[in-house]
Image 1 (cartoon, rainbow over the protein chains, first blue to last red):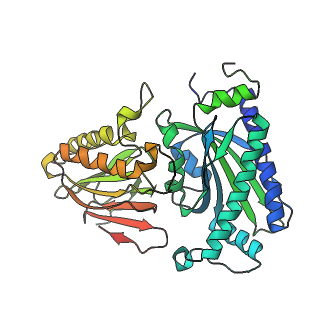
Image 2 (image 1 turned 60 degrees about the horizontal axis):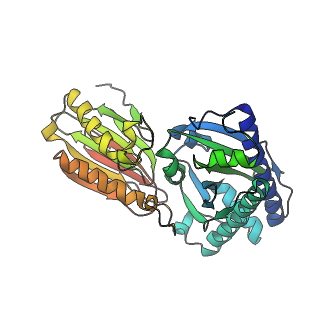
Image 3 (image 1 turned 180 degrees about the vertical axis):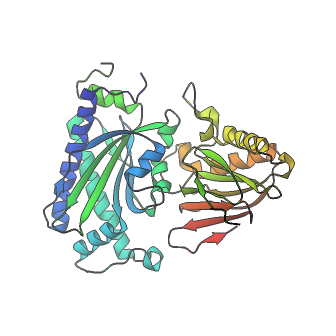
Length: 211
Length: 165
């Protein structure tokens, strides 16, 4: 089976995974910034590498990303992606300091970086634990890595396993919003299971992967 | 002399060639390597955005040859020669090959940036193409743009001044 051929039933199952993970993360985010946080219906996209960069604004777009690998029975990669403005907003909400300039001082604001890393840690951790509970698959996160750089440079790191097998990636993309104002947080969770993980995820959910 | 200058954009695991006065660029190189080959007398250049070092890694029965250093570079050379470049005049400039994240895993995939650079150097050596300059390694993303007229490679990094090599 070419792994990028998904039935609509399988896509629904992957969408549900995104839903459950991001739902839990949205709750955590809400507690962190003490504001209401909504989420959008997840989308499951089968995209080429270049299209993947376009999903978050192009390869050169500068983003703040917390990234970790999933080890265990269904390996994969999870990204939590914020624009620079969103990251600054999140930091100022969490520290009660209204103004942070992430790109100034060559990323030397240790407090800001550490706050962002911890927020990413909490959010991605809650995403993953919901996922693991739901599927009953053993998943352990690696240490989260924070990087503020071009989207293309960051996202290809998650493509490496996949790129030996396919020229397309299956991305489960969920946005969470805190949008009482225009200036808010619209975080993207991208979950990229490794190709071999799809049959395991489908099996765990009781879906025949050859359907 | 009213020529319009266009910029040819090369995607991930892709390659293309360009002739003056046009420019060629690729965005967001992380562990990938941007390989520029050029013939300065003919003002022709090619750019390859290499994702992985070696096509023996593939688990696909048919694969995109532009993805791997060992297959992409010879194709780029051939395209340049077909477009009128002299093979013996070709020179190379490299950028990319960063290590974006420090993993504590024993998988070889973690060193992919340096391995990409080594693979590109090897295949260029094999083809007797000298590397004039390079900006590789570190943990930063790069956007690069080459001008066949000046043979300069412009490199942009986050939060840094643009540099030329």
